[in-house]
Image (cartoon, rainbow, N blue to C red; front, side, top):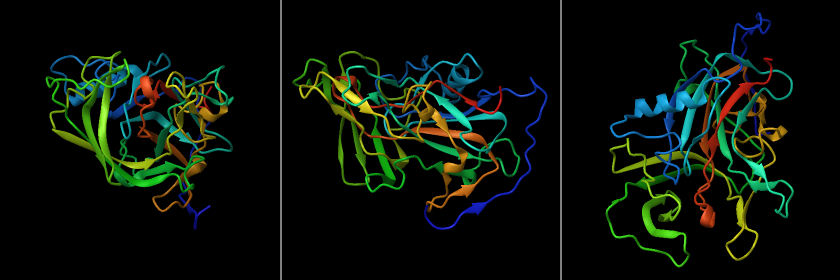
Length: 306
């Protein structure tokens, strides 16, 4: 623990009649993915779609019990969703975020496979205005939060590519263009995101007219590695707890405890519950032919409502 603990008191009544509230996501407030191979496909972009249209696409994917998957793209890409009630902060874990992570039988580490960890932020609707306000967000301090391998206040900028420029193929068969999307971060690093041979559509969100766009937040240490040593078999190691799309949906590690929330100084806060959740891709990594490590979100639900 770091320093003091802030407590916010509010009475939450949990004993509503069955059927009054949904345990699932009820609304999507924002969707701003980073660049990636599934961009403009999951969810699907149609020519002329605006940012509001794409938020509606994300809403159609995530709301309710028959939710489907959206991709957040590379580092920083995010979605913000909410519930029709305050998910109470009770003993143990309080809500689950669904993804498409799995453990692979051929991985040397038993809790490895395809794990693409997303940072989770939570907000309690303190002023009861029905929407998340900037001053209400707290980060879920997962297992990596206090480690020196985790970078706080990371910032990355992606630059809109010229889709008509001649591609620069790489030495591997899947490297269709190794100088596709330029990026730079606030640590002095820069480079290009590769276009691979498996996805030929634009990797830059086509509803964004800006020549570049940026994301900021906490960055986790890269978790994918080339187990084969030959580039054939990449595996992503699951972090212990506190992240989205970081373990199979049936695994306890996909369940989140609201009591893990911290303020921007790393002090734990005691929230009565949460109304809103933000998930963003937590690593800036490309895993060979698998492409960028991108958090996927496929729904969420309150663990206390049956």
